[in-house]
Image 1 (tube, rainbow, N blue to C red):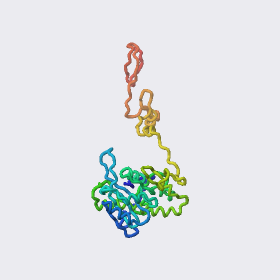
Image 2: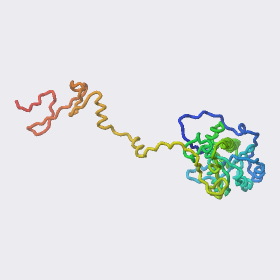
Image 3: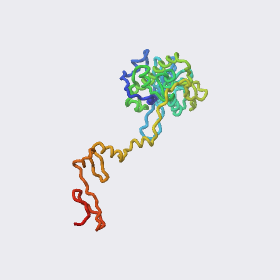
Image 4: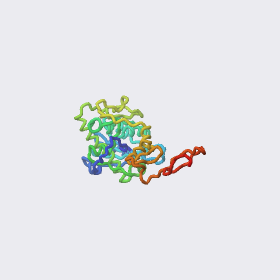
Length: 332
């Protein structure tokens, strides 16, 4: 299930559509594929593997219940120069002994994306330790730092790396979430083979770049999971992903405080100054609420003129007298 995580700086420019990667067409040499459900056959095929790096991936049956625990690893995929092995260990009566040897061998590179998590899950489910595992995202950042910026441990997806270094896109779709414990269909076999073979293809491209990059040490991008502990590629000392020569680039702009974001989202009532500005373009308001013209020629046409309140000295009460009548309080 590695290769699902995607992490990088997002851009508004869409990437061009690339042709789909298919292991039968893009393999550098005639390649045989073996789908195996028996541990004895697995041991035989693993003993025939040519010396060299391996693309590595795992699959397991998804859990569709929210909050449920993950199902155990069902399929181990290994892809070498001319061979792809799909080992359905969930269907085997025992874990293949030769597979334990290959995974434990520190001279045999196992390359993949999110490989630390995969190896930890393999140990959790099957008690198998794995050494000399190359995290392709860290390898890409180490040998091609000019292209990749940001935090060193930010993930880079398998598809993104394949597009960048091999020139093909990787199809996903519904097959990824299918049941990997049942007999595999041809679509499942091709999907699993593509993932493992893509890891091999990316590794060969990146390791070729590493020869021209100074200060590139396997310690920066390789690890082991031994008895559940994350160690260096030889499986000796504790390992933490770090490259002292990696340049993350300029820091991202600071994030706005949460209170400020909420304040921007909440609509605000117009203030008195905003109302004044809105009316000031065509007229002004007098103290008694009458709208006046800017040229001083009296009230605006079409506006109502309220009656002015006047005190009745005899009654001691207020009553209204229209503005067009005399307001004298002298008796006739």
